[in-house]
Amino acid sequence: MPEKTIIRNDRYNLVEREGCLYIIPQKPKGYALYNMFKATFIGALLVCLLLFPPAGIFSLLILLLHNSIKKGLT
Image (tube, rainbow, N blue to C red; front, side, top):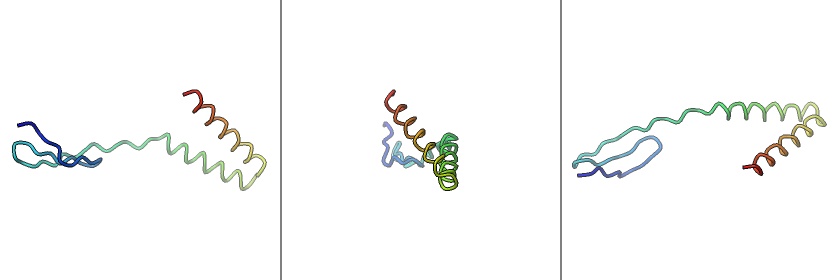
């Protein structure tokens, strides 16, 4: 008898196999280091915007242009 997945979750799967229920844990997804760098950069950008408005606005425009160009290329 083939196994039948009853509940599919990001933490576990509940599987029925041969009349018995099994809970199969899923491997946790690794924390992306890129997200941490991105959050740090945006935080530094906001501090720069508060302390030095012209430099912060210029940096924000560069970030927006970079993201729009990056999305346009893909």
